[in-house]
Length: 340
Figure 1 (tube, rainbow, N blue to C red):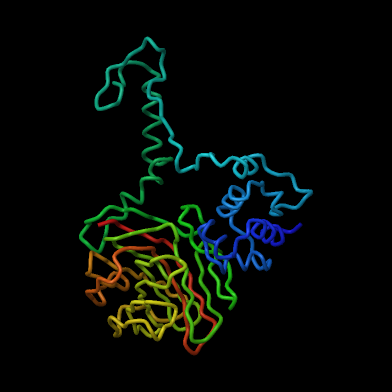
Figure 2 (tube, rainbow, N blue to C red):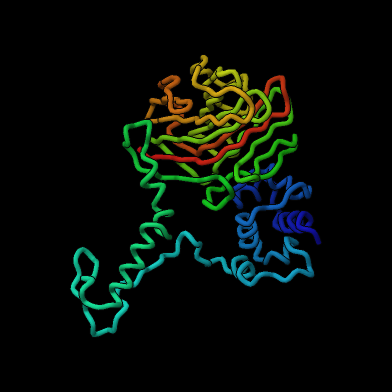
Protein backbone atom coordinates (compact mmCIF):
# COMPACT_ATOMS: atom_id res chain seq x y z
CA UNK A 1 0.00 0.00 0.00
CA UNK A 2 1.31 3.45 -0.90
CA UNK A 3 2.19 5.98 1.77
CA UNK A 4 -0.72 8.27 0.84
CA UNK A 5 -3.21 5.44 1.45
CA UNK A 6 -1.46 4.28 4.63
CA UNK A 7 -1.46 7.80 6.08
CA UNK A 8 -5.17 8.26 5.45
CA UNK A 9 -5.94 4.81 6.84
CA UNK A 10 -3.95 5.39 10.04
CA UNK A 11 -5.49 8.82 10.51
CA UNK A 12 -9.07 7.61 9.99
CA UNK A 13 -8.53 4.61 12.29
CA UNK A 14 -7.93 7.12 15.05
CA UNK A 15 -10.87 9.26 14.04
CA UNK A 16 -8.59 12.24 13.35
CA UNK A 17 -9.24 15.06 10.93
CA UNK A 18 -6.38 16.37 8.80
CA UNK A 19 -6.13 19.35 11.19
CA UNK A 20 -5.76 17.03 14.19
CA UNK A 21 -3.06 14.98 12.43
CA UNK A 22 -1.26 18.19 11.52
CA UNK A 23 -1.28 19.29 15.16
CA UNK A 24 0.11 15.94 16.30
CA UNK A 25 2.96 16.20 13.79
CA UNK A 26 3.63 19.92 14.14
CA UNK A 27 2.79 20.82 10.56
CA UNK A 28 -0.18 22.22 8.59
CA UNK A 29 -3.40 20.60 7.28
CA UNK A 30 -2.27 21.58 3.78
CA UNK A 31 0.83 19.43 4.19
CA UNK A 32 -1.25 16.45 5.36
CA UNK A 33 -3.59 16.96 2.39
CA UNK A 34 -0.64 17.03 -0.03
CA UNK A 35 0.73 13.78 1.42
CA UNK A 36 -2.65 12.03 1.21
CA UNK A 37 -3.13 13.15 -2.40
CA UNK A 38 0.32 11.75 -3.24
CA UNK A 39 1.55 15.20 -4.29
CA UNK A 40 4.61 15.10 -2.05
CA UNK A 41 6.44 12.89 0.44
CA UNK A 42 7.58 13.81 3.95
CA UNK A 43 11.16 14.82 4.63
CA UNK A 44 13.35 12.57 6.82
CA UNK A 45 12.42 14.76 9.80
CA UNK A 46 8.71 14.09 9.30
CA UNK A 47 9.32 10.41 8.45
CA UNK A 48 10.68 9.91 11.94
CA UNK A 49 7.75 11.78 13.50
CA UNK A 50 5.24 9.74 11.49
CA UNK A 51 6.85 6.48 12.53
CA UNK A 52 6.82 7.51 16.18
CA UNK A 53 3.23 8.74 15.99
CA UNK A 54 1.81 5.58 14.39
CA UNK A 55 4.22 3.04 15.89
CA UNK A 56 5.36 1.70 12.52
CA UNK A 57 8.60 1.68 10.59
CA UNK A 58 9.21 3.36 7.25
CA UNK A 59 8.45 0.23 5.21
CA UNK A 60 5.18 -0.43 7.04
CA UNK A 61 4.06 3.13 6.31
CA UNK A 62 4.78 2.74 2.61
CA UNK A 63 7.72 5.11 2.66
CA UNK A 64 10.04 2.46 1.20
CA UNK A 65 9.46 0.01 -1.66
CA UNK A 66 8.72 -3.50 -0.42
CA UNK A 67 11.81 -4.93 -2.12
CA UNK A 68 14.20 -2.27 -0.86
CA UNK A 69 16.55 -3.16 1.97
CA UNK A 70 15.73 -1.03 4.97
CA UNK A 71 18.70 0.69 6.49
CA UNK A 72 19.15 -0.57 10.02
CA UNK A 73 19.59 2.86 11.56
CA UNK A 74 16.41 4.18 9.93
CA UNK A 75 14.43 1.23 11.27
CA UNK A 76 15.75 1.95 14.76
CA UNK A 77 14.95 5.65 14.48
CA UNK A 78 11.34 4.86 13.52
CA UNK A 79 10.79 2.09 16.07
CA UNK A 80 12.36 3.61 19.17
CA UNK A 81 10.59 6.70 20.49
CA UNK A 82 13.32 7.19 23.08
CA UNK A 83 16.10 7.51 20.54
CA UNK A 84 18.34 10.46 21.37
CA UNK A 85 18.60 13.04 18.62
CA UNK A 86 22.09 13.86 17.30
CA UNK A 87 21.97 17.36 18.73
CA UNK A 88 21.28 15.91 22.19
CA UNK A 89 24.32 13.66 22.19
CA UNK A 90 27.49 14.95 23.82
CA UNK A 91 30.97 14.30 22.50
CA UNK A 92 33.55 13.98 25.26
CA UNK A 93 37.22 14.43 24.53
CA UNK A 94 39.26 12.37 26.98
CA UNK A 95 42.38 14.39 27.67
CA UNK A 96 44.00 11.72 29.84
CA UNK A 97 45.20 9.18 27.36
CA UNK A 98 47.93 7.78 29.58
CA UNK A 99 47.78 5.07 32.21
CA UNK A 100 45.50 5.45 35.21
CA UNK A 101 48.39 6.01 37.58
CA UNK A 102 49.82 8.81 35.44
CA UNK A 103 48.14 11.90 36.88
CA UNK A 104 49.40 15.01 35.14
CA UNK A 105 49.19 18.48 36.67
CA UNK A 106 46.78 20.75 34.81
CA UNK A 107 46.68 24.44 34.00
CA UNK A 108 43.17 25.70 33.21
CA UNK A 109 42.04 22.18 32.37
CA UNK A 110 44.99 21.22 30.15
CA UNK A 111 47.71 18.73 31.21
CA UNK A 112 51.19 20.16 31.20
CA UNK A 113 52.67 19.07 27.89
CA UNK A 114 56.07 18.26 29.42
CA UNK A 115 54.76 15.20 31.27
CA UNK A 116 54.64 12.66 28.46
CA UNK A 117 54.92 12.15 24.74
CA UNK A 118 51.32 10.97 24.64
CA UNK A 119 50.13 14.31 25.92
CA UNK A 120 52.26 16.15 23.40
CA UNK A 121 50.60 14.12 20.66
CA UNK A 122 47.17 14.72 22.17
CA UNK A 123 47.64 18.48 22.36
CA UNK A 124 48.91 18.50 18.79
CA UNK A 125 45.73 16.76 17.68
CA UNK A 126 43.60 19.22 19.64
CA UNK A 127 45.38 22.14 18.02
CA UNK A 128 44.71 20.67 14.59
CA UNK A 129 41.03 20.35 15.46
CA UNK A 130 40.86 23.89 16.77
CA UNK A 131 42.74 25.55 13.93
CA UNK A 132 41.35 23.79 10.90
CA UNK A 133 39.39 20.71 11.75
CA UNK A 134 36.18 19.84 13.50
CA UNK A 135 35.67 22.50 16.17
CA UNK A 136 36.21 25.66 14.14
CA UNK A 137 33.32 24.93 11.69
CA UNK A 138 31.06 24.29 14.68
CA UNK A 139 32.12 27.43 16.54
CA UNK A 140 32.57 29.60 13.47
CA UNK A 141 29.00 31.06 13.43
CA UNK A 142 29.47 32.23 17.03
CA UNK A 143 32.81 33.84 16.20
CA UNK A 144 32.09 35.24 12.73
CA UNK A 145 28.54 36.56 13.13
CA UNK A 146 28.30 39.29 15.75
CA UNK A 147 25.02 41.17 15.56
CA UNK A 148 25.61 43.92 12.93
CA UNK A 149 22.41 45.78 13.84
CA UNK A 150 22.96 46.40 17.55
CA UNK A 151 26.73 46.99 17.74
CA UNK A 152 27.37 43.38 18.69
CA UNK A 153 24.76 43.29 21.42
CA UNK A 154 22.89 39.98 21.61
CA UNK A 155 23.61 36.26 21.56
CA UNK A 156 23.48 34.27 18.33
CA UNK A 157 20.56 31.94 19.04
CA UNK A 158 20.04 30.51 15.56
CA UNK A 159 22.10 30.01 12.44
CA UNK A 160 20.48 27.93 9.68
CA UNK A 161 21.91 27.67 6.14
CA UNK A 162 18.40 26.48 5.09
CA UNK A 163 19.67 23.65 2.91
CA UNK A 164 17.37 21.11 4.62
CA UNK A 165 15.59 20.38 7.88
CA UNK A 166 18.91 19.70 9.58
CA UNK A 167 18.30 22.31 12.28
CA UNK A 168 15.00 20.65 13.32
CA UNK A 169 13.20 23.99 13.07
CA UNK A 170 10.23 22.29 11.41
CA UNK A 171 10.13 24.59 8.39
CA UNK A 172 6.86 23.96 6.59
CA UNK A 173 7.10 21.68 3.56
CA UNK A 174 4.65 20.63 0.85
CA UNK A 175 1.90 22.08 -1.30
CA UNK A 176 -1.53 23.51 -0.49
CA UNK A 177 -4.76 23.17 -2.44
CA UNK A 178 -3.79 26.11 -4.71
CA UNK A 179 -0.42 24.62 -5.63
CA UNK A 180 1.58 27.06 -3.46
CA UNK A 181 4.58 25.38 -1.87
CA UNK A 182 7.39 25.43 0.68
CA UNK A 183 10.33 23.16 -0.14
CA UNK A 184 14.06 22.67 0.15
CA UNK A 185 15.93 22.40 -3.14
CA UNK A 186 19.18 23.54 -4.72
CA UNK A 187 20.69 24.30 -1.28
CA UNK A 188 18.01 26.84 -0.36
CA UNK A 189 14.45 27.11 0.95
CA UNK A 190 11.89 28.03 -1.72
CA UNK A 191 8.39 29.44 -1.42
CA UNK A 192 6.10 29.69 -4.46
CA UNK A 193 2.64 31.11 -5.15
CA UNK A 194 1.07 30.40 -8.58
CA UNK A 195 -2.02 32.59 -8.12
CA UNK A 196 -2.17 36.33 -8.83
CA UNK A 197 -3.16 38.52 -5.90
CA UNK A 198 -1.80 36.19 -3.19
CA UNK A 199 1.36 35.50 -1.25
CA UNK A 200 2.52 32.23 0.31
CA UNK A 201 4.24 32.16 3.69
CA UNK A 202 6.47 29.40 5.10
CA UNK A 203 7.13 29.32 8.85
CA UNK A 204 9.73 27.71 11.11
CA UNK A 205 7.17 26.11 13.39
CA UNK A 206 9.37 25.24 16.38
CA UNK A 207 10.77 28.76 16.79
CA UNK A 208 9.61 31.30 19.36
CA UNK A 209 11.40 34.62 19.79
CA UNK A 210 10.47 37.68 21.83
CA UNK A 211 13.25 40.29 21.74
CA UNK A 212 15.53 39.51 18.81
CA UNK A 213 17.25 40.40 15.57
CA UNK A 214 16.14 38.25 12.62
CA UNK A 215 18.05 38.31 9.31
CA UNK A 216 17.78 36.25 6.13
CA UNK A 217 19.25 36.32 2.62
CA UNK A 218 16.47 36.51 -0.01
CA UNK A 219 16.34 36.02 -3.80
CA UNK A 220 13.28 36.98 -5.88
CA UNK A 221 13.07 34.92 -9.08
CA UNK A 222 9.46 35.54 -10.17
CA UNK A 223 6.50 37.57 -8.98
CA UNK A 224 6.22 41.01 -7.42
CA UNK A 225 7.61 40.81 -3.88
CA UNK A 226 9.23 38.80 -1.13
CA UNK A 227 9.46 39.27 2.59
CA UNK A 228 9.72 38.02 6.14
CA UNK A 229 7.23 37.18 8.88
CA UNK A 230 7.93 37.48 12.60
CA UNK A 231 6.11 37.06 15.91
CA UNK A 232 3.65 34.66 14.25
CA UNK A 233 1.17 33.11 16.68
CA UNK A 234 1.32 29.71 14.93
CA UNK A 235 1.31 28.09 11.50
CA UNK A 236 -2.47 27.67 11.76
CA UNK A 237 -3.26 31.22 12.87
CA UNK A 238 -2.69 34.20 10.57
CA UNK A 239 -1.67 36.62 13.29
CA UNK A 240 1.80 38.03 12.68
CA UNK A 241 3.87 40.96 11.44
CA UNK A 242 4.75 40.89 7.74
CA UNK A 243 7.47 42.94 6.08
CA UNK A 244 7.31 42.79 2.27
CA UNK A 245 9.57 44.46 -0.30
CA UNK A 246 8.56 44.77 -3.94
CA UNK A 247 10.93 44.38 -6.88
CA UNK A 248 11.08 48.19 -7.30
CA UNK A 249 12.05 48.81 -3.66
CA UNK A 250 8.58 49.67 -2.36
CA UNK A 251 7.97 48.19 1.09
CA UNK A 252 5.11 47.62 3.53
CA UNK A 253 4.96 46.57 7.16
CA UNK A 254 1.58 45.10 8.14
CA UNK A 255 0.04 43.47 11.16
CA UNK A 256 -2.18 40.58 10.10
CA UNK A 257 -5.18 39.70 12.25
CA UNK A 258 -6.62 36.91 10.05
CA UNK A 259 -6.23 35.37 6.59
CA UNK A 260 -7.80 38.33 4.75
CA UNK A 261 -5.25 40.81 3.38
CA UNK A 262 -7.77 43.66 3.39
CA UNK A 263 -8.17 43.23 7.16
CA UNK A 264 -4.43 43.66 7.80
CA UNK A 265 -3.35 46.88 9.54
CA UNK A 266 -0.78 48.92 7.62
CA UNK A 267 1.89 50.11 10.05
CA UNK A 268 4.20 51.79 7.56
CA UNK A 269 5.08 51.93 3.85
CA UNK A 270 7.51 53.69 1.55
CA UNK A 271 10.38 53.10 -0.86
CA UNK A 272 13.97 52.17 -0.13
CA UNK A 273 16.91 52.82 -2.42
CA UNK A 274 18.92 50.05 -0.78
CA UNK A 275 17.01 47.18 -2.41
CA UNK A 276 18.93 45.46 -5.24
CA UNK A 277 16.57 45.39 -8.21
CA UNK A 278 16.48 42.62 -10.78
CA UNK A 279 15.66 38.91 -10.75
CA UNK A 280 17.94 36.68 -8.74
CA UNK A 281 19.66 39.50 -6.86
CA UNK A 282 20.49 38.82 -3.24
CA UNK A 283 18.87 41.12 -0.70
CA UNK A 284 19.28 40.80 3.04
CA UNK A 285 16.09 41.51 4.99
CA UNK A 286 16.15 42.02 8.76
CA UNK A 287 14.14 43.21 11.73
CA UNK A 288 15.21 44.22 15.23
CA UNK A 289 12.26 43.74 17.61
CA UNK A 290 12.57 44.82 21.25
CA UNK A 291 9.28 44.91 23.13
CA UNK A 292 7.01 47.30 21.18
CA UNK A 293 9.83 48.77 19.05
CA UNK A 294 10.52 47.29 15.61
CA UNK A 295 13.16 48.50 13.16
CA UNK A 296 13.32 47.12 9.60
CA UNK A 297 16.43 46.83 7.44
CA UNK A 298 17.28 46.09 3.81
CA UNK A 299 20.88 45.12 3.10
CA UNK A 300 21.80 46.25 6.62
CA UNK A 301 20.47 49.77 5.96
CA UNK A 302 17.71 51.07 8.19
CA UNK A 303 14.40 51.45 6.36
CA UNK A 304 11.87 52.38 9.04
CA UNK A 305 10.98 52.05 12.72
CA UNK A 306 7.50 51.58 14.21
CA UNK A 307 5.94 51.04 17.63
CA UNK A 308 3.28 48.36 17.97
CA UNK A 309 2.66 46.02 20.89
CA UNK A 310 -0.06 43.75 19.53
CA UNK A 311 2.14 40.63 19.29
CA UNK A 312 4.91 40.05 21.82
CA UNK A 313 6.57 36.88 20.48
CA UNK A 314 6.21 34.04 18.00
CA UNK A 315 7.61 32.19 15.02
CA UNK A 316 9.71 33.47 12.12
CA UNK A 317 9.01 32.86 8.45
CA UNK A 318 9.53 33.90 4.84
CA UNK A 319 7.20 34.58 1.90
CA UNK A 320 6.82 35.29 -1.80
CA UNK A 321 3.86 36.92 -3.50
CA UNK A 322 2.49 38.65 -6.54
CA UNK A 323 -0.24 41.02 -7.51
CA UNK A 324 -0.32 40.91 -11.31
CA UNK A 325 2.66 38.80 -12.41
CA UNK A 326 2.26 35.17 -11.35
CA UNK A 327 3.82 32.87 -10.47
CA UNK A 328 5.82 34.16 -7.50
CA UNK A 329 8.99 32.35 -6.48
CA UNK A 330 11.66 33.31 -3.97
CA UNK A 331 14.54 31.47 -2.34
CA UNK A 332 15.99 32.03 1.13
CA UNK A 333 19.14 30.97 2.93
CA UNK A 334 21.37 31.73 5.92
CA UNK A 335 18.85 32.65 8.58
CA UNK A 336 20.36 34.21 11.69
CA UNK A 337 18.58 35.17 14.91
CA UNK A 338 20.24 36.95 17.81
CA UNK A 339 18.43 36.96 21.17
CA UNK A 340 18.42 40.39 22.80
